[in-house]
Image 1 (cartoon, rainbow, N blue to C red):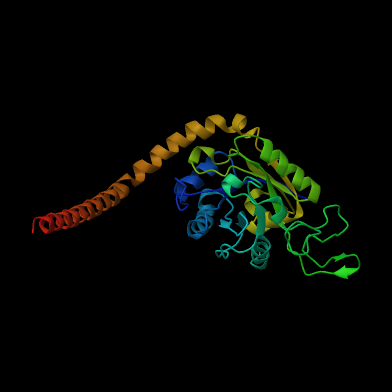
Image 2 (tube, helix red, strand yellow; image 1 turned 90 degrees about the vertical axis):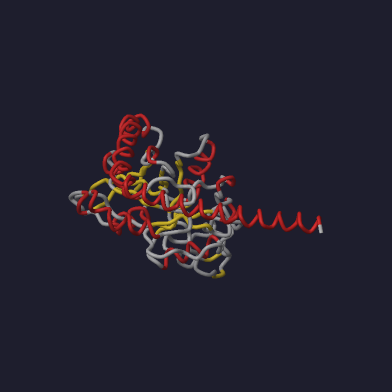
Length: 307
């Protein structure tokens, strides 16, 4: 049986995120140059640029997959392969169920790291937690199938449980390896596939960690679709590559990224300069208006004291 392996960075931020820096065109160009087969733009709580990147991906020889990093009531969650923005601030298990209803996969990013809005372990829906809060039986007495079917505990029935599809077990942005190791242990304990991602907010970090996904019944990467990648993640045919990525890709990352940035901004400089000039004029006018208003107010106060 034929099969092919694709390399994907499933967690990257563009300048559509409040903390991102790079336009999607530049990210796609860079991803193709360093040998990735797909990159998922997962901006914070906005999906417009991710959908646009997915539509343009084929122009760069990449597989187009939209996504978003949604803020739930319990922490961040990656929704991969969805075309709409998930509801914000909903419970973790409800958001997972919504992603599944839209045909996407739900991946836990940087789990347990509360300083970056990582979800707490008890809030990840796992087998044995009928209400999805993760406080149920952790010894495997209750089993739920991968599709989130019904399961029983002590002879009783429980509602359908929508589990996450994968855990981000290697996040290149974590400062120490402790959280990654804990994420790996959690994924192994509950039988979840592991993925690696750069969580890049700047171009040179794109692809610094990535996931290799094995796709059956395909002769080449060009024949692989977004649905193939989503199915492979669900089925757990993933391998993570994070530690070796800086060694293997370092030169192409940093030297290449610098050159691509320079070229991109040279090409778009005229447009950006005009936009910046317009913004500068608007800001100057606004500043003058505020200054005049404040000056008039102060003058009125002085006159009131005199009179």
